Length: 449
Ligand code: GLY
Ligand code: MN
Ligand code: MN
Image (cartoon, rainbow, N blue to C red; front, top):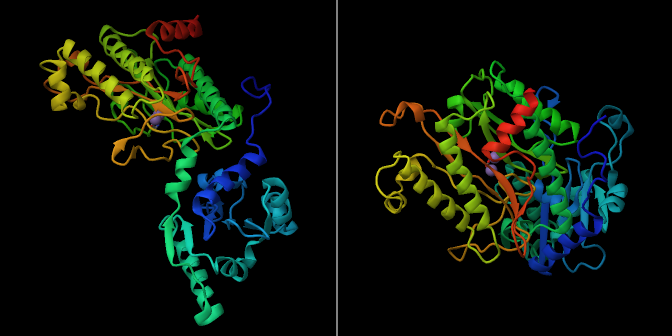
């Protein structure tokens, strides 16, 4: 029997929440606008074998409809129907091959839309809906095939009515309005994100228990995948499972090397549950015991993460966690003699970046690197309740750093957790994964006894 996360009732986004999101977006877009959002196209891997289908996050956010070949049109203020979906019709002969389709009638019920039509009728219907709207909100340039279709529908408005045509004259990027809404997570979204985090946490615990010298990285990856699929989730990005010096490759993905006694293993892997992402990194010794050098660097990254998480509070600038992490890491590197001079100088000159080259986090939500502006009017955005971010400092000493004592070379460490900003203390979504040196060594030794 599956043991993780399948016994509790599965959290869901209620139909009324999708309706609320559409209303909010329509209110921001205004009564003379039309909003057009296509579903993600199905992508072919080779011949007739498709890649696993993942709905477009914006489309999903606005209606929760799970199929390809669909287009959502929002028409604020329209009296007959403000929210309209075009989707595939039911088709028993296709459904024998591909499984059931929801169909237009089902979509109206299931997604709480005002109306739905067959996608094959969109060329006849959509130009009439566009007519009279002065602004089109759409993701221009994201899908060139769909861009061309949209241009065709707008031209059609003109040919339909000739000189009397009232075709839109403003074309506005949809991302600004929509992605600002997505940045603030609702209660139900947070429930799903806790679930995604719990599943990833179980994957990391399992991987940590299984790791040992002589295994290959992909065999540890298999433990993560087992936990994810067991709980009905998929990876939210390609897992990074990097032993030894592979941990210093920030986007390492080969996951095919042998794990060696004395090396660290860095695992950066998250689960996606009901389209919501989690994102966790742990770094631990393959043999279950940190060496003195590994431990010294690990303690710095851990302290940096603690300091960064403490900054994830409302009213603080989005950059505050990174600045706190930089301060701890620069101090630690200077104390160990890995960076010359005083910490303040290392920060001012950026000398620490050689070992900590990335930022400390990113928004998290339907996408692992989620949407939402990081700056507002040129200033770092202030954190507010409902925002979810990762906190992921690291130190990486390149294996060929000739000016660094050999005992430090090739060590790569990152620790990453997911944090929800609340009115009060930050909420750690990814709790329960061994994080301190003692917790990790104890978890691994229990697995070995
Ligand atoms: N795994 C991608 C990231 O940590 O940002
Ligand atoms: Mn990550
Ligand atoms: Mn991340």
